[in-house]
Length: 401
Image (cartoon, rainbow, N blue to C red; front, side, top):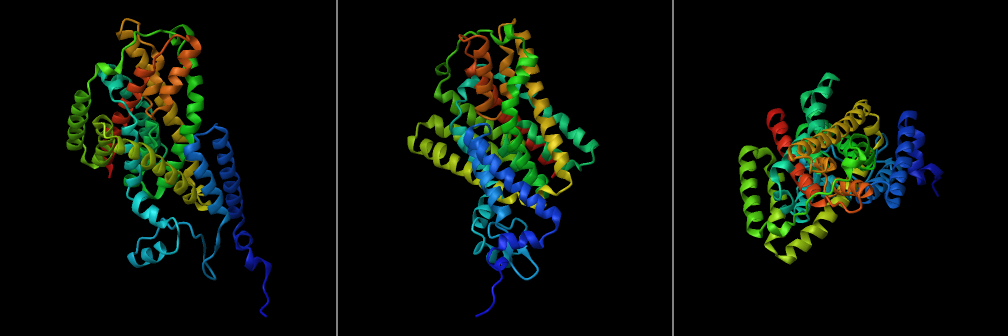
């Protein structure tokens, strides 16, 4: 009977022994970090829809390294670098997540599916209550996206990579994924992970930014109530069709995102219950689950050892901080131009991730005045932020691709 060494059986440990110390340390750190993400997701400190699958995937992929040949180590999860058609066909039959990555992730389809789901759960009537106010806030909330680009260039990133990380300021993670795939494919994994990680952390930090920038007496402003039913279904569908067509005409490179988002809105307003339930449920949450899982298994030790990761971490938090400040400034602009009747806290909702920042705004207002309701305006600002961030992405990709 042949002699069997213990490490031949437990190859995860064997690859730890055979790897360089920096790789071993990075793998252990990522396993611990992944488990931490799962814990914080379950606890609700971080966004559970993303952090639970991402953290679990991160821990599993860094633990499950094996010898693929005498001199090669790898995993049976995914190979994001394969491009040769014959090699790809082989990998598709071996790596169990490769089909999902190849057919939904690397081409941006998964981002479009999430955008379609966001459209289905978004009532555009909130924006149409006061479109100019909402767009003013949304444009100001792109401050981080706009200013982080020259900062990144000044710190040495090429234009395409600077634009990709600057999109973190849009606070729209599928948009960040889509833009980085087109502009900086080599960095799209760390950029997208930075986006999702910081979005989870920023929403815990944005309430403090609101309290610092908006005095309690202004946070408690009770706004005149308007109701969405004032906007008819025909008006919403007409707006979605015309706006989508116009934006696709102006920015064809971002047309898949525009089409997906506005198609979701039209499906919502069409009243076709089967489509609404399917896209707003299995499609949206299924795409979100696999997005988190794929990001986790793509976050191997080699990723964290990329010297640009520290710079990306700095630029990502800078972008989100500046966008939050810009959104609140936008809220103040509307406050001053409306005769001081508009609650400036709505501005933070211009940082566009739906519906989290809108909930942050309402929660902070409720703490200052339990009778004040600003959620309709906050949702309008968030929906406008989705549109403005897609426009910025279209400009970046058109100029820099």
